[in-house]
Image (cartoon, rainbow, N blue to C red; front, side, top):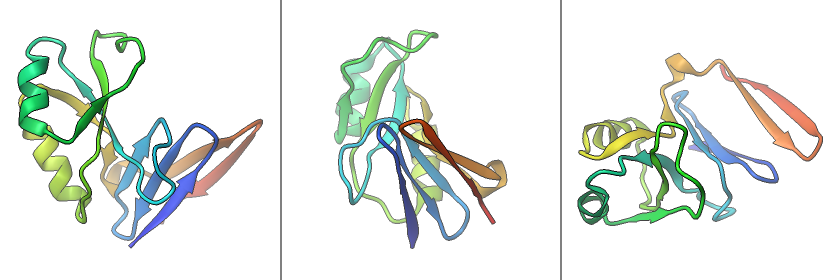
Length: 118
């Protein structure tokens, strides 16, 4: 299963196989959405293909990407990572394999909690 980590403006999970899911906005205390950056060009087609995506009401990323949340539930972060990485119009997503995650920093107000991922 996964351990839920949350702060005032961050929520994510560390899965038992080491995968980490980051999300910069809390939508649910049970299952946070998976953050994604979408290409501005062809956005309507990307949204139609992905279906369960909600655009965030925030400025574009520095490289002009559209910030969104992938809302569909999933069991296997590795499978979802591969699907999102292969999806036309998805520039990046918030799923990270355990090989890329050694530490997680969680901000809560003025405090920062440091978690070592084993």
